[in-house]
Amino acid sequence: MSYKNILVHIDDSEVCDQRVAAAVALAKRQGAMVTGIALALESTISTYIGIDIPSSLTEQQQALVEAASKSAAAKFEAAAEAAGVEYTSRIIHTPASKAPARLAFFARHADLTFLGQPNPQERGKAFYESLMDGVLQNSGRPVYIVPYIGRPDLQIRKAVIAWDGGKKSVRAVNDAIPLLQNRDEVVILVVNPKERGKEFGGKQGENIAAHLKRHGVNATVDYQVAPDLSVDTVILNYLSEASADLLVMGAYGHSRLRERTFGGVTDSILHHMTVPVLMSE
Image 1 (cartoon, one colour):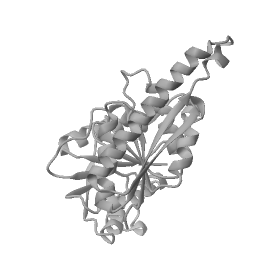
Image 2 (spheres, one colour; image 1 turned 90 degrees about the vertical axis):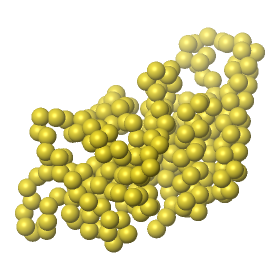
Image 3 (cartoon, rainbow, N blue to C red; image 1 turned 30 degrees about the vertical axis):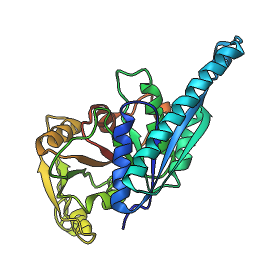
């Protein structure tokens, strides 16, 4: 089992280099093709404010957007070429409001999509959140989110699975198997475990550990009992203390456009993550 078709959202930001490096490195390990998608956003400002903008200004703006997209594509292609992986790139022209749906469409046709964590200090934070929401909710595929601070440089490659036994956790674990198979260590983290009847066989996490073992992943189960702390706090603390470099977890189930927030554990993880996160909806 391996990934054969990887997608990465590319732009002209400095943090995009980390995202591209992660996608290209995985493509090289898995023998996969990697596709870079740049979103050239079309200006619709005159429609919203109800006045005519001089065409010269609109043309200048679009020229800058086009140049930035071409620059992002060129950097991506250079990185993929240097790594010796098969690649292709596309520049998609789209209004900002339709960008999440357009990116989700292409994500449907890939095994895994790489996105960047929104930087709370950047003006484009809301747009990047909409991209994450769109791809997670509408692609039906897993998403690998790279922190805006970059990936940790650790000698031991350790993954943590946030396990609650629900269907989204199951989906995330199975989507992550190609990433888990080459890890030095995999931990199934169960926060405040529940009592289970004997008919289920074993404690929480033991069944999924047995499933992973059949895929060549030797995972251990760690139980953390902290009833006075929120689940997201326990997970974030554990990642730091365990020196992990990947978190695998199920994603939220309500659209940000409806709820106006990611909500709960997912929201906290996405905004405070310090290691890459693979999420599945």
